[in-house]
Length: 452
Ligand code: PMP
Image (tube, rainbow, N blue to C red; front, side):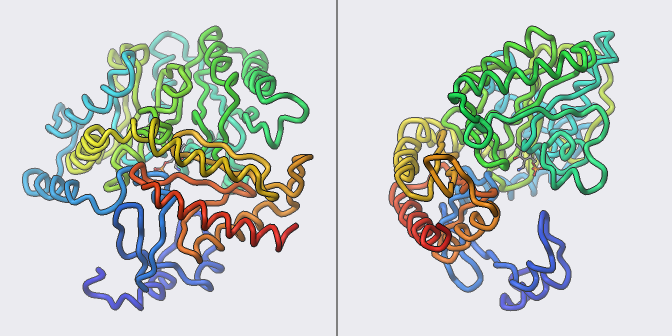
């Protein structure tokens, strides 16, 4: 496309024809889209030649960074050999089977199967249906309710948006659908009141127990949560939270689903977020870092507990492109790079700690109430009064202001309300972390002058 259309025209063409996700199109078209033309390493370059450090890895996904020709070469070879075949009618393809083996090898001894999708949202719909089929097959068809969390994110399909706890999504189109219930999130800074983070972790986890008492655990299929809430603001739960959730799910016999769409594939310094927190899910949707975004591919990792039941029945579910061979090759090559370059270990032992030091240094800033970082996933809470944890009246406005300041100065970060979020490629260098810290500091200094 860029070969045939004048690059200067792209924003106008886009404004005329393209509806963007999660966007106020009127405002967006007045401002005009930034047109990204190229990427290399952790840097993206727009059509004016301006360079940005992408400290958000696209949309939490470009874990191996941009411009890896190995992936392009592998994809090209697979395209020549077999561009597509389905996995429905007793067939598979070599890359599909090999990817199933490789992805489950990293997921712990009790997870040995995967169901492929094209995205995280489809993965959510897949485990949602699979959970009900699982319980029905066990003679418990009344276990049909689901519990998730306010401010969680699980995708944009009807089931995904319903399980997610985003009010602004529920407001459009009569969501959530029936039998989905939301409990509190482990967001101590905003909701922990006078409790210590550890006390709050237990208290908020026990909302699950209370909800199970209310609904009857015999009617509940599963609880789902992100190990670390991503889109909700990179909210790292207190250390007490996950052990308590895992205990409750086990004792009350409901499935525990860890949404690994962001946390998976090294982001936290472990292969998966649940490994970082030391619990074992029954199912885990994945996407994003599985292919580093080079091609769309997702899936649901399925534990032996669930697979052994599902595989005795006909699961009437699937996508034309489930296990797409070209996407599978891109994912295989991506995982090979993560393994060979020891990127997970790099995040855990090397660049992760370096990044965390730079990030936590912001706790001294007047505007900053709290910083959280696990691996290369970080949230920075802005506050009007850091002593009392008082927030700004218009949290979205200050977040957007700081983000725009960063973007103007060549740094891509994301804002969720009054939290600044970072999730850089796992190959980010120390110099790039220094640039990020310097640019974010300038933005926070300017914001403090403007907003205090
Ligand atoms: N789950 C989580 C935790 C996510 O962050 C996302 C996407 N940001 C999804 C599911 C949905 O994934 P996708 O956008 O690929 O459908």
